[in-house]
Image (cartoon, rainbow, N blue to C red; front, side, top):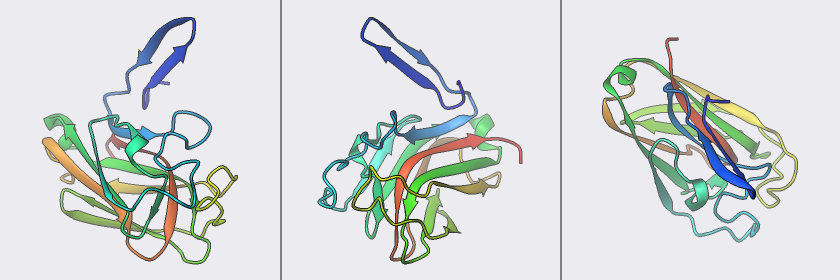
Length: 178
């Protein structure tokens, strides 16, 4: 339970927070069984205008980010890494709920100026307009070599490298020895 951390809230007791493992450098995602924490959920297809969104910190609030990543939509994460963790390789996992069914999506990650891309299989194509539909979950993994992270502030941008789309579920970035 402590890998990405937990926040437990009930009506009849104080909230409890279990902090994530020290290996967790960044974690973001849904907090329930749907994607209601993301901006625009419940209003498809009239999502908020495409804009760049910047999220700060190790466990940012996803409410400013739309669940749909397509076209000019992109998300930038700004997070701190200590000197010890910056020297280690890391693994970025981007958990998706669905992908474009017409075009194989190409997910692009730019971390501190270094470009990484991942070709993904086509999905069912349902969640673009109906996020509540069961879909085609997938995790895109990026093994980041030592030297990709830096001590202090790190900047990571996620976007689509081609004319396709994906729906976001969660992501985590963990330091580890490969």
